[in-house]
Length: 211
Image (cartoon, rainbow, N blue to C red; front, side, top):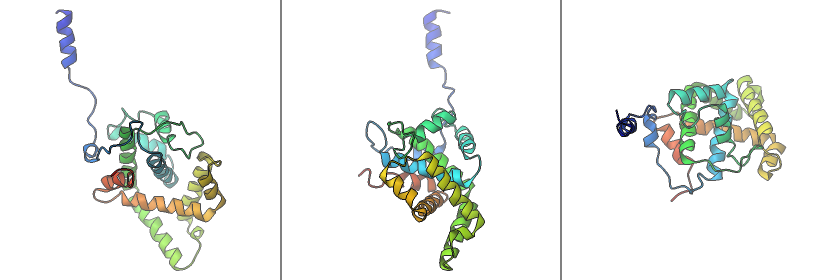
């Protein structure tokens, strides 16, 4: 066989890359900057993943397993790649001063929504407990499971976010503000669990970003 024939056969060989999940093509390709998504979008995605980490032990491994199950390992192959994508959040101590590109942002959003669906019962339970405690004017720390989530979120937030940033300093100075952030992220995760939840979450990340 000639070398040119072999090259033609090689070029025509089918791709071995696994197809993306069906949701991939149902998430709009918003016209973001050539550099990538806005800092606000990267920040929002990272905070949602931070909330998921606070919800379950071994969350990073679960995210990587989800990436594998959904054929997203070309974008998120390992823990280091996941960490680097999350460090596009300018609030982070380890901020890499780079933009989150659209395709990795899609992958992280799909993973966040998928993990949220797996944790729907727990998320609903925590938000119901929050509502009941507020109605009775009782401290949120009174419920063991809710307090466990809030404490873990505070710990992760303090260790990973840059205290020299003014907004971070505000959160760190106010336990109530930080708890409210943790609870608002739970509500956004619940928002992603229903029918078309991934699409709704994706669109919400670009509210005010595109016309």
